[in-house]
Length: 372
Ligand SMILES: *Cc1c(COP(=O)(O)O)cnc(C)c1O
Image (tube, protein in one colour):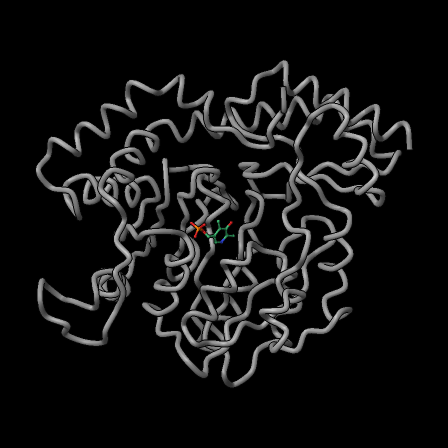
């Protein structure tokens, strides 16, 4: 039997009654679009973060795109981010008409090297887009300082960091606004697509609500600029409400899995296998459990024998994709990003990952690394 890097079926079996009840609740409500479940989820997700507003949207990519637009980003602007991220981060910037600008990542945690941001700022820079990648937060203090000094806005990409904390503060509460994805694999995942933008700024939230609803202030009137149809689905919102109540339990489950990996594999550091490091002040939520080894490809090949499916997040840094060749980042332009892309791989990680499967992964990885 294949051990998958991610699998929702054990969770579905455990939560099935509640999830089916969520679907039934919506179907019987008489309101299938922007009804009580979207409104309820928005209030509860904002409350979870202690912010004033949440606007539900149809997916995380559009959360980033509309979030940037609500912050005033558009054609001619530059947005500083990283190339070591899910392509949608960059696709969303491109979707606003703005130009993505990349800085490299740090060797020790794969996150934005904030020391490189100052040199990337130009008169056209409008926004900073830190990505809290793999489940832990980028250092926000240096970014806030730069944003204040240069009059920039900050949108946090929290698609991988639901519930992560940075010096006690939740991911998503440190920028001007924050974008979340509820794609099924995410730390808070729907049973389909979903996304949201949170903010404590009334005007940004007002713009978000218009942007996701054709640009309309109220039904039938496009008051300002034309927007999109990017509404969070009512059924997904009701499922997310139920799952939000269990979010802290999911985080605990992920941390238990991470601890077991650490106990089982931590001693392989002197054989070149490096486990994820948590920065001072961060609470990691392990959206993915990314390890690295200089002979990554041989390890992945060896693990096929054990029927364990591994993932690489991400094998091709965004700037090396042909669709972004026009940005002009040649090979060698982001050396740490490019080198780590050849060394990283992700072990199976989800809160309901059975302990037996985890032990199977640990012993297989041990054998593969020790045989090199
Ligand atoms: C998943 C993800 C997105 C996009 O979310 P979708 O819901 O798949 O559109 C954006 N940014 C990051 C970092 C992601 O991991």
